[in-house]
Image (cartoon, rainbow, N blue to C red; front, side, top):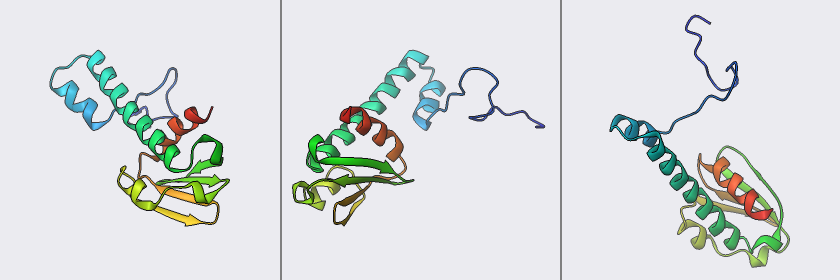
Amino acid sequence: MKFDVKTPGRQITGETKLYTKKDYERKKQGKKDTDVAVAMSETNNVFKTKALVFLEGLGGENNIESVTNCATRLRVNVRDPEKVLDDNYFMGNEAIGVVRKKNNIQVIVGTSVSQVRDEFDRLLQ
């Protein structure tokens, strides 16, 4: 209340934009907001690429029953676990690890899992 800092959820109107360290560095170097927007789209492409790679490794769109996530893991229920590629495929494509239990596959992505999940959901639509 003393400093009235506008954090997400406390803004009066509009949206509070969260910036990454890359955004800050670009701004510090004197780059324009359009350059920051380009950097953000490049970042989104990274998440989309990861989502595409993970979707392929999980057996494709038709093999996915449901998708959720926690803080670091993409949790996927698959129809046929035999179609899921081996752990080395995921590890070679920037996954931290894979946990398998019957039809439940957890791809450990890290803290960017929510962005990857958003792109994963878009691919499934």
